[in-house]
Amino acid sequence: MKKLFCLLLLVLSCPLHAQPQTVGDIHITTTRIDPAVVARKFPLKTGDTFIPRLYEEAQNKLHDMRLFKKLDFSTQPHDGKVDISINAQDGYYFFPLTFFSSGDKDVFFLSLFEGNFLKKGETAFATAGISDDGYSFSGGISLEDNFFLVSFTKLDTQLRFYDDFWSSTYGVLNVAKDKDEYGDPLYQWDMRDYKLRLLYARTLGDFNLFLSPEFKNVSYNTQADAGNHNQWTAGLSYRRNIRTSAGMGALFGFGLSDKKKMLADLPAAQYAYAADLSFTWGGKWSGADYDITKLSATALWQAETRSRHTFFLQLKGQNAYGSPFSDQILSTDLLGGQGRYRRLIRGSRGAGVTVSFLYYLLRDNMGLLSLQPFYELAYVYAGGAYRNHSGAGATLAYKFWRFPFPLGINYTQNLSDNSHTVSFVAGGSF
Image 1 (tube, rainbow, N blue to C red):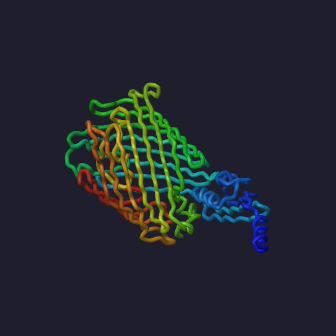
Image 2: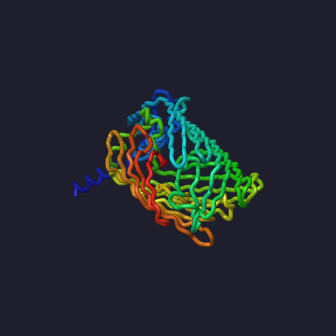
Image 3: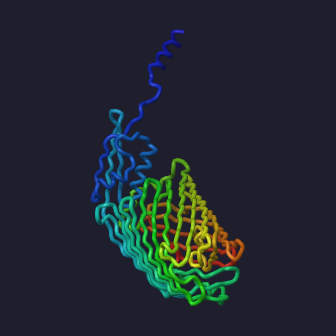
C-alpha cells in the first residue's frame, strides 16, 4: 500500500503535457541574395509553435526556390524556444539555349535564362521560336511571390481535317507529320492567327491566383469564325507537396541544395496533391466578335514510394459552353501530356484521365534513369456524340542533375486510330 501511494504521488508530480516549444530567433546568412527575401519565403516565424513536420516543410520551401547550391539548417533549443540558423550559399547565372530541327518542318528555338542577378531571388526568361508555320516570343519574370508573363504568337499554317472528327495538331514548334501517316485529308483550311497574351500570378502559401488577358485575331480562307477572339481568364491553383524542377540554374549547381536528400529513400510513402480551376470569358465588352465562355478543372494525385518511384493520377474536364470553333476544346488538352499525337479531336466539352508510373532504374550522383509507362483517355463531344482519344506508351529518359531536361525516347500508341509515334525527348519532343 505504501508503494502504491508513492507511485501515485510520483505520477501527480509530473506535468500532464509537455509545454510546446516556440520558434525563437531566426538567423540567416547568404552569399548574395538579400536575407530578407529568404526570411519572407521561410514560413516559420518567430513566436510560432515549433513542430518538426512544419520545420521540414519550411526547409522545402527554400529548396523549391531553386537558387541555392547549398542550404544548411541548424537549431538551438533554450528556455522553451528553438533558435533556427540558415546558411544559404547562392549566386547568379545567365544561360542561353538553342536547338534546330529539320525535316518535314524546319524549327529554330532560342532562349535565355537568368537567376538572382538582382539579388532578389528572381528568375527570368526570354524565348523565341520560328518555323515554317510562324513565330513566337515570350518573356517572364518570377519575383518572390509574383510572376509576370508576356507572349506573342503569329501562325500562318494549315488545319487538316480527317474522318471521325480528327484534325491535325499545329503550332510553331510542332513538327507532327500527319499527312505522312494518314494521307490526304478530307479538306484543309489556311489559318492565320495572331495572339498576344499577358499574365499576372501571385502565390499565397499553397495557393496561386492568376489573371490573364488574351488579344487574339483569327482568319481563314473559308467560312469560319474569323475576327477578334479577345478574352480574359482568371484562375486558382493549389499545390501540396508538389516539388518544383531544378531549372536552368542547375547547369551551374544552383537549385540542387536538396540533391542528397532526394537520393535518399523516404522514411515512409509520401503523397502530393494539386488542383486547378480557371474561367475564361469574352464578348463585346472585351473587344471580341463572339461570345466566349470556357470552364476548366484539373485534379492531380501523386503517391511516392519509399524508393521514390511515383504513381500519378490526373483528371481533367473542360466545357466551352457553345464558344466558336477557334475556342473549342482540344482532346490533347484533356490528356496528361505523356503521349505524342499527330492528330486531335476538338469539340464543345470533354473530360480526360491519365495514369502513369515513374520507375527509377538508376539513381546516383550523376543523374536519374527512369521508365514511365502511361495510359490516357479523353472523351470530347463533337458532331452530336462523345468521341474518344486514348493512348498508351512509355518514356525512357535520363536526367542529369546538372541539366534540368530529360533526354530519352518516347513511344506512343494512339489506341483510337491505331497509329504510333516514336519521338526523341529533350524536355519535350521535337
